[in-house]
Image (tube, rainbow, N blue to C red; front, side, top):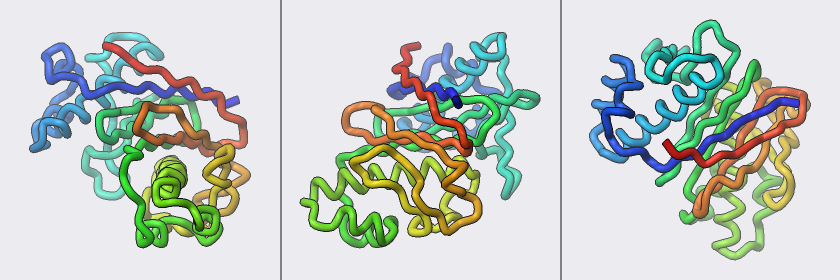
Length: 229
């Protein structure tokens, strides 16, 4: 069994007690955001990640140091990693919700999206495989949009778990029906093997869809928590 903890939070205020968890590089990234909401989302993700890491590994959140070096370009905007630890983290945010997923020793991906947006025909054509498009055919506009974001969050979660992101063509992967348990049915990309991919749809919060994925053969045991600082 692969145990995953997912913690959700609304954007935290820009307060000194939160800012002090940022190191110099993270402070630079925080200050580079022009919009306050983007600053708060970044800050909240780091507070969630460092608080959980400190609880797991000991110490204080402000003493946690991440390595966020991007494997592609070398800049510090990649997934946060804890040197010398098997703890694996994934952060995602959308609207007024920020999430952190954590597990040990297996690649992990989390995605959350606001679900009050529309999914027009061009977006469905762009993102869904033929089997998925067939599954949503005939639905009303609202039903199709709701189903689309079930598929979208599943796709984003598994692609984040691989570390390849949108380098994997969205149409190359097919999931079980939007109204059934989440399962990767087929993949045209070697980075994703259905036999070694597990995922779960999440409750998240009203107005949002979310999914978490891990590259493992074991079933997932997912716990969702709404965190208050």
